[in-house]
Image (tube, rainbow, N blue to C red):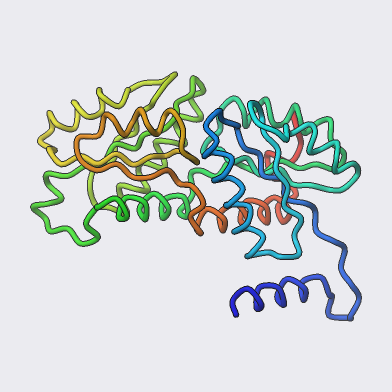
Length: 265
C-alpha cells in the first residue's frame, strides 16, 4: 500500500494544477567512491532501490569515482543532455567533494552537484539506529552515562573542512546519546581510533562503543571493528533514513539556485 501511495504521489507531482504535465525532473546520480569489497556495490544498489521506492518517477543512476563501474564520467556520457543532480555518497567536504566530483561534472551538460550527506540530523539518526542495533541501550540511567562514550570512526581526510564536518556530526550524535562522542579516523587524520579510545578511558569512560561513520562495508569498517572494546555498529548502509537524506540533498539542490555546489569548480 505504501509503495502504491508513493507512486501515485510521484505521478501527481508531474501534473500541474492546470492539468498540464510538468517537465520530467532531473536524474539523480548517486556518486559512490568505489571499493574493492563487493559488499559495497551491493549496499549502494540496495540504497538506490530504497530511493526508487520513495520516488518511483525519478530516474536514479549510479556513478563511481574509482574502482567500480560504472565510472561517473561514463554515467554522465550516457545521460547526454539529460539534466542531472549528482549527490555524493560522501559524508563531508573532502577532496572528492571539492575537486574530483566537480571536475567530472564539468564535462556533463546541465549537471548540478549537491552537498555531501553530512553533517545532517538524518545522518545522526542513522548512526544512532545502527548503535542501538549493535546493543546500545536506548534508555540509559545517569550512572551508565557517566561511564559510557562513543568513538565516531570515520575514514579521514587531510582537508580541515572534512574534519570540521566529522566534528559537527560527532556533536550531533553526542546530543542524541547524552554521552561524549569523540571523532577519530582510520587513515589520513588524527586522532586515530586507538588514541581516541585511550583518551576516553583516561577520562573514566570504560564502556566505549564505536560508531561506524562509513557508507558501506569495507576495509576500514573491518579495521575499526577489531579495535572495539565493547560494541561496534554496522556501517550506515541502506538504512531508510539514508535514502531520505539523499533525496533531501537532491531536492535542496533544485530549490536553492545559489547552492554553493551548483557550479562545478
